[in-house]
Amino acid sequence: MELAGDLVNSNGGDWGYVLIPINVRDYDGGKWREVFRKLNEKHLIPILQLWDLSKEDEEGQLKECAQLLDSLEWPIKKRFVSVFNEPNDSRFWREGADPSEYAEVLDKTIAIFKNQNENFFMLNGAFNSSARNGDGYIDEEEFIIAMNKAVPGIFNKLDGWASHPYPQPAYRGSPFSIGRDSIKAYDWELNLLNKLFGVNNLPVFITETGWAHREGIIYNDNFLSQDVVASYFVKAFKEVWGPDTRVVAVTPFTIRYNPPFDHFSWIDFNENFYPQFRAVQSLPKIKGLPPYLIKKEVVCE
Image 1 (cartoon, rainbow, N blue to C red):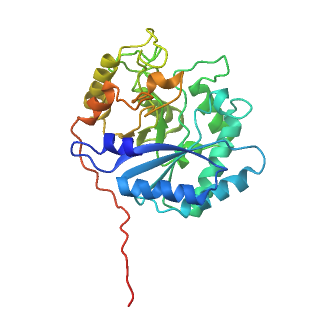
Image 2 (image 1 turned 45 degrees about the vertical axis):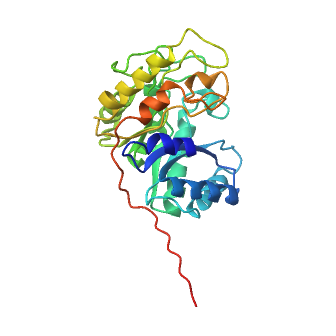
Image 3 (image 1 turned 60 degrees about the horizontal axis):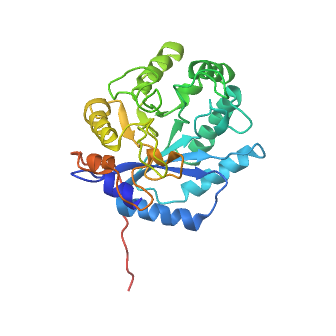
């Protein structure tokens, strides 16, 4: 969070966004109160991404998670929650990708969280838009059609749209490409939602994206150089995502991650910055002005 705050609230910025995964069975209130204290201190708006829902007592797990999150001091009025991660990929969905099951879980989660507090702002679990059928994947278009068949109108219940628009192929794509395999995959997704279900005007939250750089614990020359990656991020923010009024937040993958995903990291294991960190940090930013929490201390004598 220290690094995220230094990155997103720089050069005129304030109240930037940060993605934080949360296990729906992690009820350690003390830990999460400290996390939220730091979020308030750093003026960071969290997007919480749920994960690790088991099949036993789904409703109980979701209710307890919603109660815990409702008890925390959120930095701003809206409470952004993304309901799990890439459910059309079997690696991220329990015993295998299942659109009917995910639709039912999404429906249940939205109802539980909204019943707990109407300020919860519910996002889908972002899909793997570039995956086609096979090897544990279900094509996103096929997946969402099956979801809506299982729970008609499920996409009308969302407050916003979470997206993972990666620059394919092989995380090397141009920042100016379009379509489902590009950093504008959310545009393809929104068009699908409109065409198939008549869903319009969902604000977009890019909760993962980014180019892989060659540099890491093991050098990989299949990826782009760190300097090219930095230049691509600058172009993306300045010329693609930034001017698009539908895009509310972009939280790239990721500040730091273990191998083999360290090629996406913005710092290395010695906490040295890759060029993309300084490049995005130096971009001019607009100060956010959300309704936020103000704590006042009252002293009784």
